[in-house]
Amino acid sequence: MDREQFRKAAYAAADRICDYFEKLEKRDVVPNVQPGDIAGLLPQAPPENGEEWSEIAGDFDRVVLPGITHWQHPSFFAYFPANTNYESILADMYAGAVSNPGFNWSCSPTCTELESVVMDWVAKLLGLDSRFHNASGVGAGVLNTTASEGCLVVCIAARERYLRLYPDTRASDFVIIATDQTHSLAAKAAKLLGLSFHAIQTKKENDWSLRGDQLREELEMLKGQGKKPFILIATLGSTSTGAIDNIPEITAVTADYPELFLHVDAAWGGVQLALPECRPESFADAINASAVEGKRGEVHSLIVNLHKSGLVMFDASCLWTGDRSLLTEALDVTPHYLKTEQAEQGQVVDLRNMGLALGRRFRSLKVWFVLRSYGVSGFQKHLTRLNDLTVVLERLVTGEIDGVEKLDVELFTPRRFHLLVLHVRALPSAEVDKLDAAALLAYENALNAAVYKISTGDHSLMITATSVGGQECVRIAVGSSQTEERHLRELVEKLRGMIKRAREETPLP
Ligand SMILES: *Cc1c(COP(=O)(O)O)cnc(C)c1O
View (tube, rainbow, N blue to C red):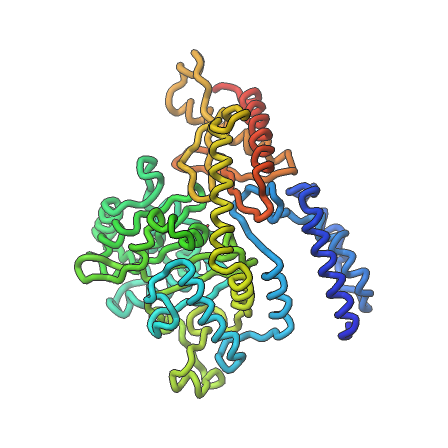
């Protein structure tokens, strides 16, 4: 393809993308394909001779779209939002033009410096204390692909920190601690590092979040077994229910365990820190506070994914630490060919020394474009809109909106930001009264599983199921920038039908 052909192809691609968004609502959310259908549309080997661009581009409609689950669709209520927008799409196009691996400052000074500055922008947007800012010269903010990658990075940093304090620690004694509501990234990091993992069982009465007294008990128990818990992964907005671990209680405990690294996984919930009214429930003050010896521990690192409801297209996972040397001491490996004068003189930071890979994508460009185009107020408005819509959904479900009958379902946990978790209960009857606790639980789990199963047969929407404390639930994550109240009303009516059918089709034990 030459430059003139590219020019035309790029205009046509923009048209095709606009077409996609224009007609998105008319599509099903979930594609109607079976495993292997899409692979079956593809040749088994690359073509011997190059093909015409028109043919290649046409396959976006013929091959790609038929197998796409439309996360931008207004009736996508599964997992979590993965917002994209035109600013992000354009940024990735420009980043493609200047493609480079950006590992050193000298690889492309803009890549390093823009990332350093926009990470401070995001920190300010979220109200993070200056101890996390790149400008502090001590703290740092960097972009990773995912929260999982960032979590692995901080586990490595935490292990290194522990080894500096206690060099003789045996690998077999190290334990990563988290809770049973922590995202699987914690167990995965343990697996990748060959270390043990301990999940603290959360309780319903705490809304599935970790409390201080429980943490202390578990730390003492592990220490009694000769184990060395070296990192706690706390969560701000758990995957199942949006639970928020009690950071002030946790830091009150970690004051007595200064060897324990505290990481906060705010991959989903962290963007809500952009809304001042959401900061108290997110324990922003405790996240920001520095340690006070003997009185309060501190949050050593925090991860927030902008690529969920933060308007920046996947991937843009923000990692902050209050002490960049925690990362560089664990990850800086500088062979001769990576040495630069600027880094040797301490004028610049080489971002590769704060992450796993050498090469890194130019992600800061899309963050910069989005933040400039939306502004702080636009970013906040986007989140407020999602949260307000979810309040409407909650009121539709609970029958607080005129003309809409209450849905025959309970809220499993209180609404968290733009996540609602529903639970279908057994209807009172003489037969249900006779069930023992285990049989009732099994029956209610079957009811909830049935609602989810029925939902998978309706491709016009997508929701997800989860299980918390042994109880099955149905999760509704509101998050597409295109979702409006009418989509929620439609969802509620569809759920009504699904719940009714689940009750009819699920036999009592
Ligand atoms: C989505 C999510 C993750 C995983 O995010 P990746 O960036 O895909 O690794 C981890 N933790 C929480 C709480 C999440 O919501």
